[in-house]
Length: 165
Image 1: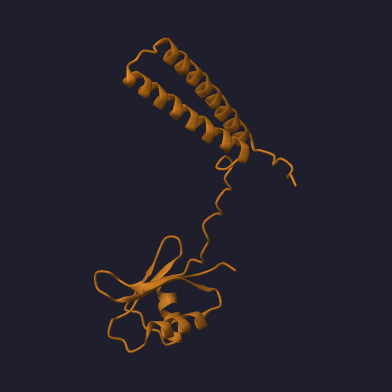
Image 2: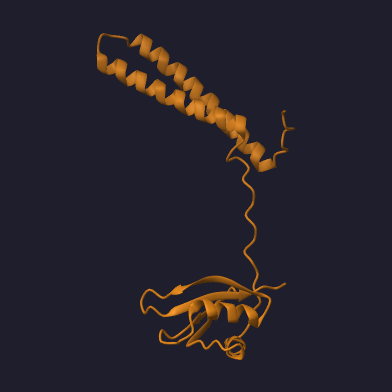
C-alpha cells in the first residue's frame, strides 16, 4: 500500500530542492575524487587510504541524504502547539483559595505566564499528597504542573495553574 504524497509547504519544497542540489553536488565531488585517485595512483598506501576514506565519507553522506529525501523525515516537522494559556490571578486570590480548602502556603508566587508556585513550611503535618488533593478540590480548572521539594531549603512546593476552560 502506497500513501499519496503529502503536499509540501513552500518551505519544505524549497528545502527538498536544496537537499537534492546538495546531493548532486556531493555526487559530483565524489566522481572528481575518484578520478583524482585514479590519476594519482601510486604504490603509496597513504594516498590510497586517504582517497578511499574521502570516497567512503561521500558515499555515506549521499546515502543518508538519499534516504532523507525518500522518507521525508526531518523535512517538514509539525509546528509545536502554542504554550498553554493560564488564567491570571493575584497572589491574594490564590492565598484565599488555598486557605479556604485548608492548605496554608508559606509563600505564593504568581509567574508571568499565569503559573503559580505555592511553597509550604517543612514542619506542616499535612502530607504533600493530601495538599494536592485539597488543592484540586478548590477549583475544577486547577492543573498541577509540578511538585517536589526546593533544593536549597527542602521545603515542599506545588506548581499549579488555573486553565482558561
